Image (cartoon, rainbow, N blue to C red; front, top):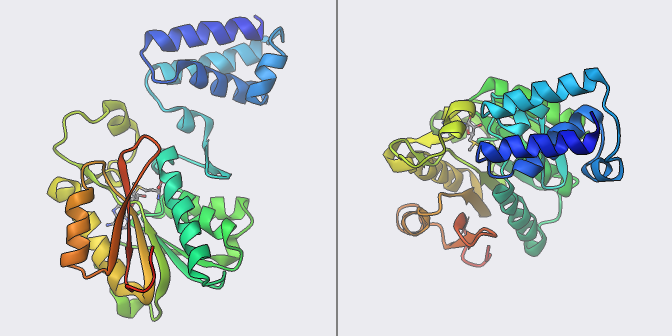
Length: 292
Ligand SMILES: C[S@@+](CC[C@H](N)C(=O)[O-])C[C@H]1O[C@@H](n2cnc3c(N)ncnc32)[C@H](O)[C@@H]1O
């Protein structure tokens, strides 16, 4: 079978399954088997696959056909400027989370804090957010926190692969239970992507729920429990001119902004939108003189 035909057949099969990006999924899976870039799929469209390659493509397609996410089949996902190993123990990094990294990098540059800063990533998962920041800010020390030891094992593997493991610390535990006295220092910046999906929500993608770790997704109190508690920890653990950046659900911005201002006394709080124009981030500064 030639490449062009297998690509067409796979795309057609995925379209029939109503997948969101049938062509892209087919390209990623077939390119992985052939060790081609996506461009090379088109510059080699008459490439004849041998029987072993056809079988490997079939295996990938069968798994995807049952609903398994492409990133778990490939074992990696590209995020921001790097490639991260992923397993079913961690949430697959989402493109909309890249603005958490982008806006945090912008803030560090704007504050003139230099690169000798201490950063925490709450709920690090694969490490995609904290490790991307460590790569961008060459002297930063980064602490990755997660309740899941298997997630932190994978984050460690990612830090080694990115060659930055000497600046990364891994802290396993429940953020809601860790006390400031166990740390002995404060953070200049804390970034977070907490679980924020309402456990009772009905319109949530059932395949995401089936394949991705539920403790990475769902939170009590209509999805707000961890958002509120992690922000309180952040307020307590930040330096007086530090800032907290947290990803939020599209409908949580107004409530959380008011909560951060009234209950936690962050001085400047703003909501940022993602590229689809949904509320996606809250940026909260402890000091009124440092605009986030
Ligand atoms: C939404 S995922 C974010 C993963 C990664 N930062 C990303 O953006 O792709 C949330 C992460 O928080 C971790 N987590 C959930 N509850 C936690 C808790 N109470 N304390 C620490 N980590 C927790 C989960 O294990 C998961 O890795």
